[in-house]
Structures are given as C-alpha cells and as structure tokens.
Length: 554
Ligand SMILES: [Zn+2]
Image (cartoon, rainbow, N blue to C red; front, side, top):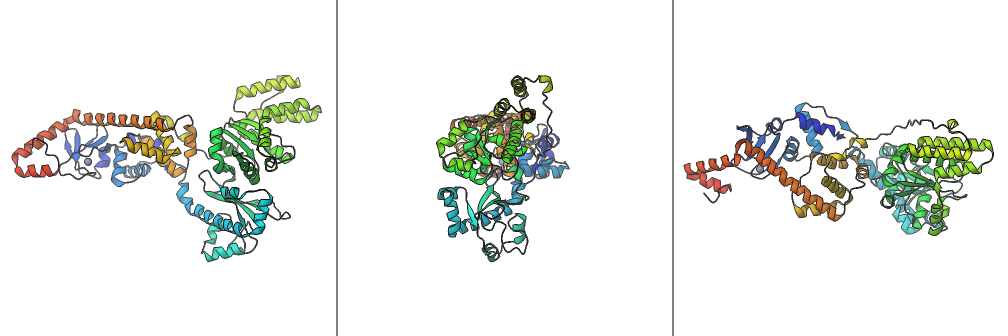
C-alpha cells in the first residue's frame, strides 16, 4: 500500500525535526540550534546542526541537509514512504493509505503465468496441427513471436509437466489455469493460447481459441481472478500502446485475431475487449492513450448492440467516437484485403452520432425511426461535452421535424464501481522542471539518469520523492503520464530542467546556510573555537589536522 499524499503534509506540519533526530542522536544545545556528530560522515567534532525553529537539519562537514523525512530516509536507508510510515509510528500519527501494494503481492502469480506460457509456447513448436491452424489463418511466425502465441495440447502433458516441475496446483487454480487439484488437463486443452497482459506487460490470464471447428465454445478466456479483472484489461493495449499514444487514435475490436491480423498488415493501433462489453474503466484507460476511437465490431445484432454500449462509455469519457460499418466482415477478414482497403474503411468512418443521424433520416418506417431516435437521445445523454450534445439535439430536431420540447436528454447514471485514485495525484505540486524530470524518468530512465549524473546535485521536493515511490509501488505510471501529456521530455528539455534544479539546490543550500548563520554565526563560532583549542593544546592541533579541519592558519 502507498501512503496518501495528504499524509506528507500532515507529517511535515506536525512533526518537528528535533523530535525525530533526538531519537537517533545525542543533541547538544547551541544557541537556538542543536548539534551532534554527523551520522553520515566520520568526524570528531560536531558539524551536524538541527534547527527546531526552521524545522531543518544540515551538516557543515559533508553538506547533507534536509527535513525529518529525509533524515530518516538517509539514516535508515529506506524509501520515502517507508520513512513516512516509520515517523508516523514513532509519533503516533495515523497515516492515510491508498491502493494496495499490488505488485509485491502478485509477483509470484505473474511469474507462474509466465512459466505456464513458456510451456504453451514450447507445445506450439512441436504441434504440427496447431501450427497448420495458424498458418491457415495467415498468421506469420513473426506475429506468433510478437504476441507470444502458444498452444495447449489435448493430451495430459500439461499436468505431467506440472507434476514434474513441482508446481503448486493451488496456485494454478488461483490463476485460473486448472479447475481442481485432481484435474487431468488444463482448461485450455486443444486451444491456441493468447497471453493477456496488463499495462505493465505482466500476464494476467489467457485466451484460448479451439482449433477444432466443432468444439464449443470457440473462445475460452481465463476466469476473473484476483489479478485478472476483465473490465480493466484490453487485449493488445500493452503491445500497441506506444503507437496508440503517438497517434492518439485507437481501433476498438472484439477478438484476438481482430488485433493480430491488422497488426500484420501494418495497422498497429488496435485493442480488443474480450467477451465483455466495454466498461467505463476500459474507456478511462483508453482516454489516457487516445483522443479518437474507431469502433470496428461485428455487423450482427449483438455486435451493433455492443458498439452502442461502447460508444456510450467512450463519449462519457470525452472521446471522439467513430463507427466503421464492416458489411458482414470482421476486422480479421478485412485485414486479408490488405493495408489500403483497411485504411479506406477507417477513412470512410463517420462519427458515431453522425452515423446515427444519417440512419434516422434514411429510415422511413416511423417505428424503426422512433427506436433509432431513442438510441440517439440515449447516446447524447452520455456525452461529456454538453454543448455538443445540445448541438446534436438541434440537428435531430431539424432532421425529424420534431419540436425540441419533445426530445429529452435524460441525465445519465452510471453505477459502475470504478476503483480509481488518480485524482489523489496532484502534479501541480511539482515545479515545471520536476514535471519534466518525472516524465523523463518514466519514459527513458537511463537517459534521464545519465543527464542528472552529468550535471550534479539537484533539488527535488518531498512530493517528487513521493511520486517516484508511488510509481514503483502502484504501477500507476500511466495515470501520471496522462497528466504529464503536455510536458516535453526530449534531451534538451531534461537538460534544462536538471540545470534549473541544480540552481534551486544551490539556492536552498544558501538558505540553509544563512538559516544557521543568522541564528548563531555557526561558521564564525566554529572557526573561533578551533583557533582557541589549537592555541591551547598542541595535541589538538594534530587531531584537527587529521580531521581535515586544520586550515592554512594552523
Ligand atoms: Zn556530515
């Protein structure tokens, strides 16, 4: 679990640096400050100062400085949030937490799913039947590699493999691969396997397509498990996310092959819902990557219904929604006609709302027309942009000749439980340079670290440290990236940000120095003290020189 950001403020305003540091070091009062031997560098005379008034500490020997939180971080060698937790425990402060430490909890299961996938991939290599099925569907070997496609054989080799490798069967039940401890086969036997990954690229479940055309159901997916929430995952998003983010356009389809076949012909911004209607959560996730969505669903009744439902969710999230009618094809088949034709279909797409308006004006049967008008009005009620919804209402009134007074946009209620915490993150608490640096660290950690190391010591706020921790714990870098959408992260911008943060660091250091100097003229006093000691005892002189404090005047 991660500490809630407001807890940082609480700790900072309620905890005094003196109360914390005095639990670690013996502090001696000098003027309005306290001093001690520095715990961060070897020394014999104290140059580590604590100012309870300013609520800061600084060592004039090694130059380290900070507040109560950074002291505990440094002293204990722990992360920012762990330091918060430690301080809260010591001071009896109740912290607020958000989310769960999902990653740590689930590592074991992610690894197991990865291991199971390796088995399926191996099986595909040795099954001529499965490979023939894929080549009959025009799936290229490079695509098999890219999407890590595998195969679960019909015999009992999975269970034999499990037993041979001492794999815990209870864990396999938990991740939805077998049904019970005495299962003789896995759930996907006789099927082509598609690993389903979350946004971090971790496998959370499998999809299976039967290679026997008489076997039912044709598609079988992993059940929902504690790591596989169907309403939160989109197939292909992990694999295609960079291209989607670049173009800000995504194509929404319904199945594995609808993602994979277009990919092969160069349409690489496709994602699929897997046997469930598009949820608001999925729409929210898509909004992070794209502004425009093409819905390419099957043209049967079920497909049309699903498309309307998807459009509602997407409009609710403020996406620009297009509909691409497929004339009795699915995207997998459409892809067989090549890139050009596929692209043409996309270009001929219409906004979902305009498409419906056309249908309304083309429909003469008044009962069918009424039905379409109801669908249209329902759609408008989901539209995030109320001005646009109003414009469409005018258009509808124009086209149908129905007085606007009879056309009603009902307020919409969505009862979906969306576990969402992104609003807890407030990136305005970072300065612009920190925002650039944060984006750089998420997008290209190595390059960004190189630049930092090249230039030197930078200043970052507590909130910056907090976010770095949060990203590691909560896997929410996409929430944060979405908020940093307009922040540049090219080398020049990062360099500029680093240089600026070095300047801030220097200013902060000067402020710290003056904070102590104004209070007690520490430096001056220290120099006098040293002079006095030196003049008294020649032995001191020697020890002082050893300590590197003996200056030219020794
Ligand atoms: Zn020090």
